[in-house]
Image (cartoon, rainbow, N blue to C red):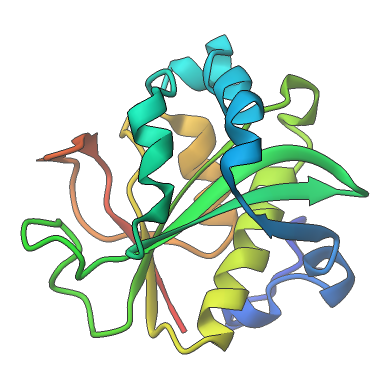
Length: 180
C-alpha cells in the first residue's frame, strides 16, 4: 500500500510523488510589481502569526543576490511565496555548517482558501527538486517550533528534524534538512 504522500519506504525525495504533482506549480521570480500582493498576503492573520508585516525596506532588499524570491502559482493563480538562499551568505547563519552549495528555504501560503489542501508540501517538494537539479546537496528550512502546519508540510516534502529548537538571529527555529 502506498502512503497518502505517494512515497514508499526507501524512496528519495526526488521520487516522493508522481511527477504530475510536481509539475503543477509555476515559480515566477518576484519583482517590484509584486509588492502590493506580498504586502496583502503578509497582512493576513494566518501569515502574521509566523511572519512580520512586509515593510518597504525589506521588499527593496529584493536585489540581495544571496536570496531568490518566488511567487508560486497554480493554474495561473498566484497563491504562495517561497524564497531560497545560500546558507553561507551570513557568517552567523545556523545552517552555515552545511556543505557548500546548500540552500535554505522559507515559504508561506498567502491565499487562505489554499491552506489545508496539500499545496504546501507539494510546492515545497517541487521547489526542493529544482534546487537539487541545480546542484544543491542539502536544502534546509527553519520553521518556528510551534508552527505545526509548516513542520508537517516540510516533513511530507521529505524534510527531517536536524536538531532541537534553537534561538537564531531570526528568532526561535526548528532546524530541518533534506539531502539530495
